[in-house]
Length: 152
Length: 297
Image 1 (cartoon, rainbow over the protein chains, first blue to last red):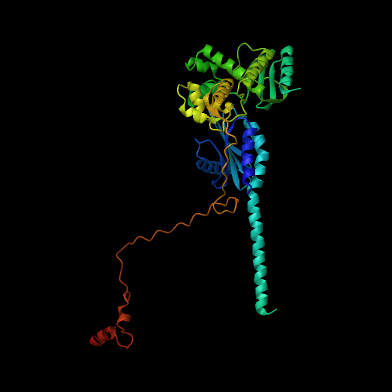
Image 2 (image 1 turned 120 degrees about the vertical axis):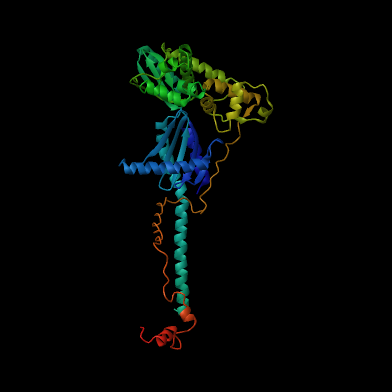
């Protein structure tokens, strides 16, 4: 995975949308991957909350036949917290103050989410590919050794 | 034509036309200018705290109380009457807050970049509108004058550009004003002057000027590069994987049956018969009793 590219995406989003105060990316199970957060925020806890919140929202959408889940946004008097699913592997948290234009945030996050998904799954795909090629090599080695034993 | 000239031209035209409605300014931070009869009655921008943020962040009213006032006023975005009747603020003070927020938002729009303007129909009632509007040309000239004054300072700062952090000198500084203490406390190398204005509940122009002065005096400094964002992968090192469905709960274990009576001894359970080898030689205790009592079974 390209760590620099992920950090660039997170910082770029904060600079692109006025009012974003913090961002974090976590695996779908809530394990933190990267956090660009203020010291006053516990990023590990935030990632776990986001995973639980998205899970609950997804089940609510299913149970009420609301279709595919887009995002969840929590509004407070001092701003809002938006949770987005990144593909089916990860999630992104965006915190903003009360000045943030939430519609503009949603527009700006769509391309960023797609790029972050590509960055995160790059390693997995590579690993799977290499695992597949390693296992096929092993198979070939075994076949060759078997042939050698049989004296073919 | 620069963004400012575009905005000035369009707003001047609105003034001449006696336009009533809103002008959406696209750009960064951009905003919305509400006009009534060619006069600006409210400006909203993500770049400057509005009257609501100024009241809430300054602690004049709490979030719960604000929500209560909004409910009381039937869902109005700006419960002005409730604020006054409940004594959170005076009527004159509220007018000052609204007028300051209007000018501050105009400054934020002018200090950023303007890509375009688009007229739209009037919103039902612009939030926190001032009773007597400002002529748009005068409002923009005032904002431009503030920006020029800011950029003429020894350490010019833009509301959304610099991200200052406390300098070593700030730890030794004493006799700081309340605003300066707050800014040193919140500046962390990630926040801009605009972010600090929202956090402290003060006007973005006031905070930006103070940040510029503090940078000039060495109380704040701008880090060379932003702090790196640490990235770590899940411990298995295989990158992120799709979420797995939750494992099925284990089948409920049947509780052991409650004993209804004392256990009964089963013959041969102790294994003594096998242990003494009674069966091996063909004779057993049973045979012994049978010999003693030939009529028994």
